Image 1 (tube, rainbow, N blue to C red):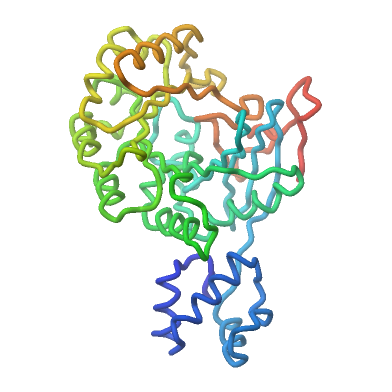
Image 2 (cartoon, one colour):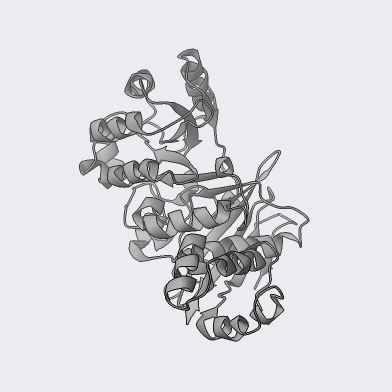
Length: 364
């Protein structure tokens, strides 16, 4: 049997025609029943031929993520632990002033080994399937009714390097944005990468319906290679060249993510170099003060210094925003996601009520 959620609509249409000798338009009917009407029983899909329904039941099943735990931060951010087969991943519903943003994972672990990220300490374990990516989204949607809210944006910034799992991530995005699928606007989905240059080029060539974000985090190859091993394979000159060639529009720029590590990559010299480095790149900059409670030996920069960076970059004609961390008290902030059920307890993963917080809760 096949997991229905692993198929995009074109793939489903081809499967219906080639394997089952069924008219492709029936695939569109089923797709709409499943994603728009949330029906998961083929017998209830009343506009399908009665002979087709048992055939579909024999060949497809619908996976469901097990919500193993939910932790709520004092700032309203929620972190989920989802069981996906023999592994678990974390997803985060980030509470922002005017909206909610859902941060999903694309892998169990990560092979990029960035020095400032706890997920990298796990190493690469496996790619998530398209279904397992979508199950996180569905799981959060189903739980959001308990809070009377919903996410407005989705970011692939959870566990894993999304472009290292290109096929499953891009297929999931096409289902999320399809008018018969989740119908989420492409401008509301962002994929973050450490800088896998061939995949960035493919992302642009195949017109994946999502925004691109690149984790830059340094202005010299020396520092970037120290904190991001991928730079040894794709140094700054190669990466920046790919970003200059990436298709953008007036309303669709590349987001340059810059995790500020006090005294290492946030010097005055870095601030002078960054605008020059990005010259010719249609970009906006997202400054991310490092979370020193991730326990990896780096320090959080002074708040005034972060604002100085933002103001200086703006003075150089660059759009710059600051992403202040959310959910730090439940280890849900940027660079803090890590899990391995075989080695770590829920307590070690942060699934305990935040100290002195009436909002903190554990649901298992």
